[in-house]
Amino acid sequence: MLRSRRGPVVDIGSGDGRIVIAAAKEGFTAVGYELNPWLVWYSRYRAWREGVQHLAKFYISDLWKVTFSQYSNVVIFGVPQMMPQLEKKLELELEDDARVIACRFPFPHWIPDQVTGEGIDTVWAYNMSTFRGSEKRP
Image 1 (spheres, rainbow, N blue to C red):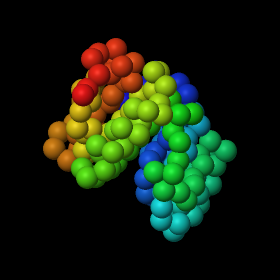
Image 2: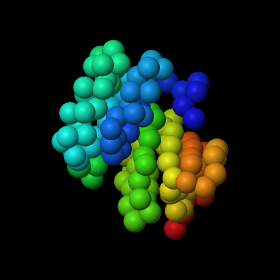
Image 3: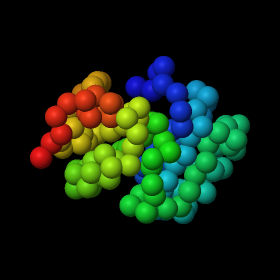
Image 4: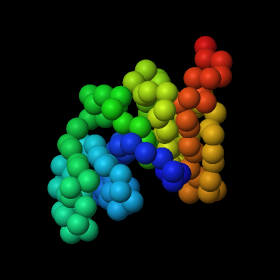
């Protein structure tokens, strides 16, 4: 879902780092934010082992304390309970050219530009320009 996209990638809740590392292997500058320090350290090790440590960075941080305005591409593997609040946060912070990729759980009010997969493997892509070009939600 990031083919033909440019700009930095952020993975919110990056876990073991696989999304950030895959993006770095495709030439993106990629950053992962994760609360679990063990997973951050493991991700840094994996990035070094894969030879992409210069493009892949990982930080121990709470997603609610990070500003995402500098990212053009956002990936989130969230849980349903957090999606409404995260939707509002990203709507306020992201530029019009940003794309948000939601894995497994969609955002409750945004209409996706692209959907792929099915069941637990469903992924939704939201372009902020499309969203902002339509009527704002109440």
